[in-house]
Length: 365
Image (cartoon, rainbow, N blue to C red; front, side):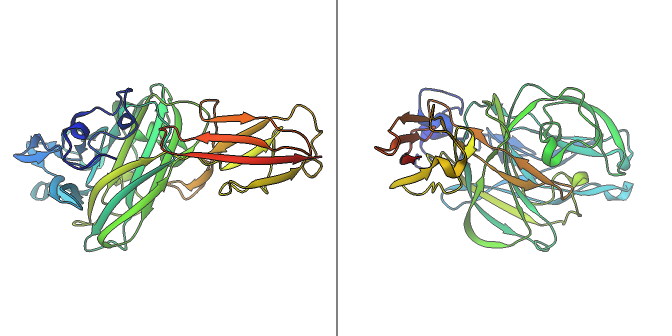
């Protein structure tokens, strides 16, 4: 990793391919505060859920002293005009995409919001690690969110859930709820779907008064490579009208030093399509498997490794399963062994070159 305040880290875009830093998020240390909203410094590469409607402006993203250098701070906040009965607590969050809010006329019941877009991206990290603090008056009543997701293609939709629970018409491209259909899907359907590749999602009702490093596993829906990704760090229920519970004015999140971790381990190993449940992904010692126990004939041995397998509880409380992705030839190479003799040697490299694991599998009849 680069040192904080390094010019190289601050200004190198996330999608440049000639450096290992390309496989990290832009300004992952939150030091590049070069733009402004309502005279408040704002991050150049990240966007806050700032609101500018009906002639009023409300700032959600601020620079604060971080774990090292600066950090990003967001908090739930009452926005609108209370005297006109047009006020609502909104979630404070930052994202690599673009937050949006929409209100039809002066009808508060038509209010809806979300995030669209992200950044160009073609990598497949295995974990997102982020340092956070979380404070506020009701941290035990409201989830905060740490979210990574990637996709390929372009989604388009025109109906989104509003405060009243019905739909409001507004055209959006690559809206978060249109991509994350398995975990936070648009209740009113998608006109044109994109293909989601991966997701890492952590949410909890908790207070962190001291800097704490949270690791978020990234799960995979398929073997595809993404073309886009987005990240959302939210101080409270996101977004307001798709949340399970209410929003609490003052619940805050501090975020610093985000790192994407690329693994060289295998989550699951199959032989001729049959999972070997006795495989130990943490051991580089010789491991022995009997083909008879798997019901496999000893011919044309084919070994495949998989990663990013798991499940998440979606916004409705249902289970969304991620089957993982098969490691490709660039990540995993195999030197064949002999039945009842020398072991097969499997070398797995992390996608960013940060680590290597070597597995030795002795195959017996």
